[in-house]
Amino acid sequence: MKTLKNSTIQKIKDTVLKSKYFTLDDFEFQFSDTERSLLNILFIPYPQYEFTIREIKVKKEKQINTAISLYETSYYEEEEKLQVIMSPGEYKNIQKSICDKLDIAINQISQWLYYIHIELENINKEVDITNTISDIKAKFEKQFPDKNEVFLAEEIEELKAQLENIKQKIIDLEKSSQITQEEKEEFEVVIQQSSDNLLKYPKRTWYFTTWNKFKNLNTNIKLLLEFEGSILKVIEHFL
View 1 (cartoon, rainbow, N blue to C red):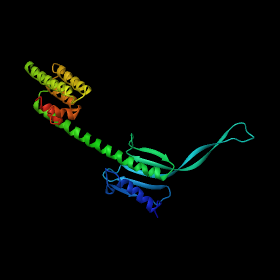
View 2 (view 1 turned 45 degrees about the vertical axis):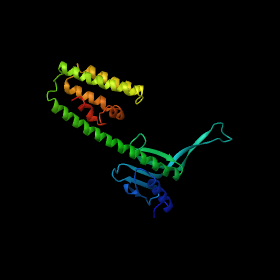
View 3 (view 1 turned 60 degrees about the vertical axis):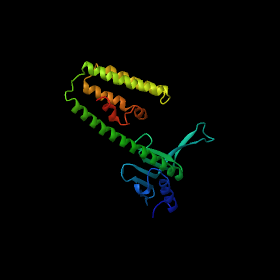
View 4 (view 1 turned 60 degrees about the horizontal axis):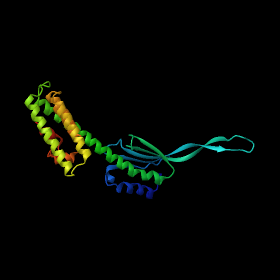
């Protein structure tokens, strides 16, 4: 027989059902019939993401003061507590906490579901940016087979003119209140650094470092600059 009542099991499943990120079918629920282990939920696509509730004994120090002693003495008494173990946690891959009531432990399931959602989003971002970096490196290597090739004077002037054009667009966007002064200044720093590096870096290195600088800037502003929202469009603008 399962340790938890059917009504409690249903409450646990209802907590998952209320999630806007997942469905019950995304999880495997294990309700133990052992005394100490109460619940284990596995996220099926990533089994390392799990949520566990179990009973534990915690030693708590008690203070006593007797009439025949001038000093306080202490002893330890075991108390029944509930331990919640979730992966991922808020900051750590594995997060542990102790609580007194099962309702408090069950309420942490919704937090765990949110942490999974955030972790999956970041996995996708990491995969996307890794793939994009590989694509852009391959593009530069094909475009500039000689990694030591430097810019000609006329190429530098042309690129500086393009950077200056972007700078003017940024100034106009700030004047028309479409972006803030802070956002304008952030772009201006990148533009100035990119312009200065034209005389310092070989072509391939300049394109890669410039792409890196622009890729981290506000995507909505890059749309206003007609980069079409794509990181690759930033460099294609210069090529």
